[in-house]
Image (cartoon, rainbow, N blue to C red):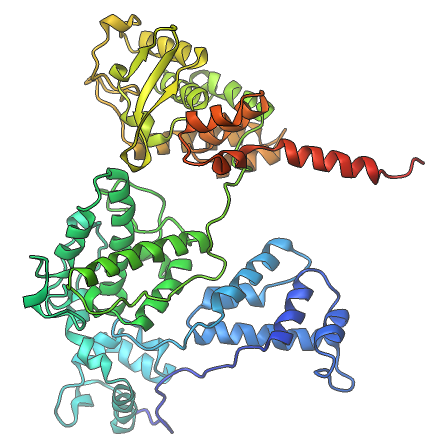
Length: 565
């Protein structure tokens, strides 16, 4: 039986975006304002006679969900459809979804899309039987000859004309077909250092490549050009951070758009901004942190926040600006692409443990090998990392890079540790008695001398669990401490659920925040904390001051005390 269709369909419908009055009413309802009050205030002329205010809010919700669906954001559509003021978490997620969707353009088909996204279900079923699942697959079956459809059982001339009309409406699909068919054969996402870019998508013939004769780079393709940009940065930490953003973009460009970096358009950049907020398909792009050599490695650990997305866009903007300066490309597709609400935020002082919370954490750490199944060397190392990081405020990269030779004493007998911090800046940090005691204990446990004169200068401060005397990587330390925080959360869950939730969110950097907060609460001068943390500005260090907030809360509470019964 052949399928007949009444009319071809080239793109999804385009539901309109609610106006500001409708959005204001919906937001007010999300924040707990009764639907009648919200509609009377913002939409007094929208309620038909006999209609309820709840139905007006429902129409706005459905309009937003339909808009999200038309932009291929099904997860956001689900979030909006489930929004309710009775549950703060979904309500907050719905408000964030509105900002993500605002101004999002109608999606255009790309050659790697599944056919069910663009073709009617009756056609999709027939094509699936013929093992045609993507637009790339379909492109191969629409050659320049008559009756191309005759080899596909169940597909007649009417259905074939529908498909031909779709491709005619989107001629760019055919132009991208060769590149994406090549990429479609490469299903595994691999990190930057293992990436073998298909010839058709490597940028050697990129759409926006500048004339070769005027280029200041020897690079012949995008991968080589980006590597040249990365090599400008001497700091390994900076290289890794910038490589991550370039890596994510080039993988997305090839796998999802079938384009080289030097062929990306502004529309591609806008689509990538939306993609970073909700990477999909999730199984391909998102996964728990893994070593870069692991088959389970994924480019994303989850959705990016507005702040993280803004950071990624700033890095990619800088990369393209440099490529333009080197006359490698002619245009920057990310110019002007920004994120609403993505301005750098102040340090989150909630990312620190109170003194009482820290004491509970340390109690759990003391029983790791006895009660929670950790090996003795692993438990000893974890306790040292906690105590030393808390007492010094060092960053992870500084801890794993430190060696015993970096520790010395001055003429006054004060102990210091020399470190290389952010921006490859050298500095020194006070080594207080807590840190020195933790170090001495850990050295004994490792079978190493405690006397500084007997130390081998190149010995890593934090050792691996093997016997080769090597250190550990930043990634490994991050995983070990996250495992500990998860263990501690399970232990305190019943008696202190708030702390358990905090521990599940905690990262190793929280020890630095906790160090600064406790130091200031203990009466240390702001300049002392600034110098020990090696902040460039007192304004950054002052983020850890809670005393002004506490004083303000106490004074307002004293003035407006509740009446005594």
